[in-house]
Image (cartoon, rainbow, N blue to C red; front, side, top):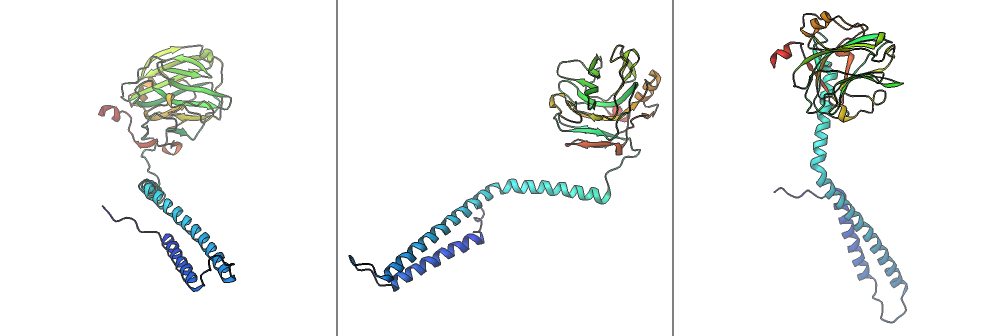
Length: 319
């Protein structure tokens, strides 16, 4: 076992002051004549008593201060390990930040060769696209994803505007099927994405008759109409990857969160042709979204989500 911690200087000084005062009281009592029993107190005796009372009060104050300091020292000793851990954690974070400032954030070449990793299902890990959408009368949204969920897929992406939290949402929550929401109207999608493997998915829609279609790995799996017919997608909203927005840009629900990896999120202002979607899925085409492109500088990560290198199709072949 190690030696007990040394007394703090302040405690030692107070203890020495108490001893010095006590010695002074003893000397004064010895120098002043003793009071005769039953006699009227003399002036020196009264002075001695007053001084003695004052000294006792001061001694009590000093002792109280010593006890307070000792309690603080004991509490500090109890918390020392946790404080050291917190300090080391903060220093590590600061060191990483300094390295990033000195050398710049890691870049990807080409700039779309990365993925976003969301390792834990919670309500604070997500990615945000810096760019918003214009007013749209049709769209195609495509992305690569690899779910690690034990239950529902969660929310790979959501687009919210001030007047409508569910302007565009792809969501699978609990035991419900995967759903595409547009202006809070719902279409169910028969996609199978919970095998912990990479999949390429696309959803396409047009305001004309509310026609829509859904693709998995280049193949059309479903199509329909009357989904938010004649609705115009509102502009200047917020695109979030990995969380469902109950209000503009926030109020996330951990039970609706995506856990896994996402990449190559792109948005077009029209319905892509089936051949174009197949080319994206088998990597024979590198068609970029003409509204939103997947670019390292255009994607921010929050809450512990991170970026890592990714090359479409190569990741799938490794599994």
